[in-house]
Image (cartoon, rainbow, N blue to C red; front, side):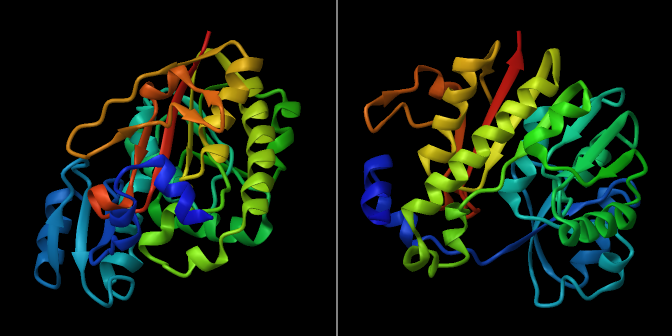
Length: 294
């Protein structure tokens, strides 16, 4: 059933299932080291390619990239290349008050702090205590000094009364876009999980919309390819809240627009959202949509 669904979504389904990833990806932590100095250090140890779409991202080949002094000191963070995109879409500024609703383990949180140069404030929230341990570790290791960590069920975060300039909702998902790293996901795929996650995602985006200030920005993302977890969630929010989709434009990376029709539902706004398919850039699959509160 999963293969049939992918064939309905894209014309090159065979390439989707065949895609494989050789290079690992890392992000420079400019809170602690310059891009140039880290590149010089790592080129002596590894084969490195610069990331076409992000100056602070590198592709690396090496078995021990989590076992060297630069990593332990927090000079770089091991982060999936496509996962670096939602903070770039958000374009945070130094003065912003940002809520990262589902922040653990902190890859995007620390990237936001880095872009903001430790200015403003980030509420880094997660529901799981065990995941918050990883979030805390990564924030401390990165030297991200503008983060406050909270342990709250994000479905009800609007009950806190907080209103943010910008919100990142990198929602829990079925992670079907990770197939490039794990082909066994095909065997484990279950439609009931897609529907279960979609219900959770709708509850999360409801809270996110309520927490957003007027003219504020909400970036919604998942590493799932399922329309029920992506386009249908955005459509749910558009029908219930005074928000609009803003067009996303990224340079240096191949993107495709969102799915415009699925199971009889039409999404006229989908051309403004983006999908990153694994076969296009040798990354995980990702869906990203940028919303503005009217």
